[in-house]
Length: 204
Image (cartoon, rainbow, N blue to C red; front, side, top):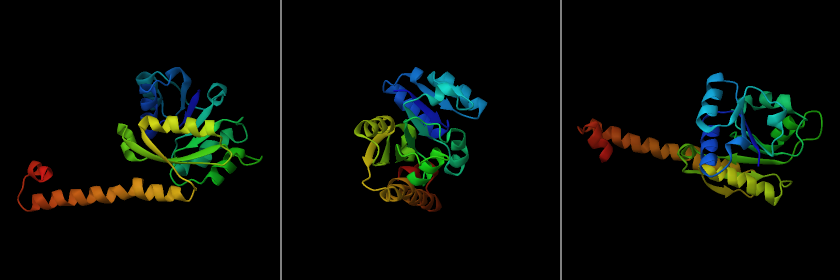
C-alpha cells in the first residue's frame, strides 16, 4: 500500500513514526511538505521520500492522507483537484466536512467521494490516541480497513455511524479532556498557593 501525506506536521510525523514501527515500508510512504527543514527531518528520521510539491510519483499512491491545517486545505487541494484516480483519501483535518473536501478535490467535475474523515487526539503523538473515523458510503470494506490500519498506528479507533457524530468525537476526546487537565493544573496551583513546593503539589 503506497501512502502519500499532504502535510508533514506533528500528527503526520506521529502517524508515519507509528506506521514504520508497525511494519509499513518506509519506501511506500511519501510526504508533501513545504518546509525544507521539515522535509530533511522526515527523510532522515524515517527514510521516507519528502518533496515540496505533488508530483506524479506522489500522486500515484493508493492512499492520500490530508494532514494540513483546516484553514489551508482548500488551497492545498487546488493543485490536485480533478486529478485523482480512485485513491482512498483520509482527512485528519478537524472540522472539515466530507462534502467540502469532495467538492475541492473534484474540481470542475463531480465531487470526489472515496473519503474517510478522521479525528485523532493529542495522545496520538505518543502512540496512545483514540481516533474517531467516518467513511463516505462509497468507501468499501477494504478502504475502511486501510484507514483503520493507518490510524491504528497511533492508538485505537472508533467508527462513527454518522458524520454528525464526528463533532461529538471532537468534544469528547479532543477538546473535552483539556478541561480535565486544566482542572488538575488548577489543583496543583492551589497546592502551591497553600504552601507546598512545586514537586509536592504535583505529587498530591
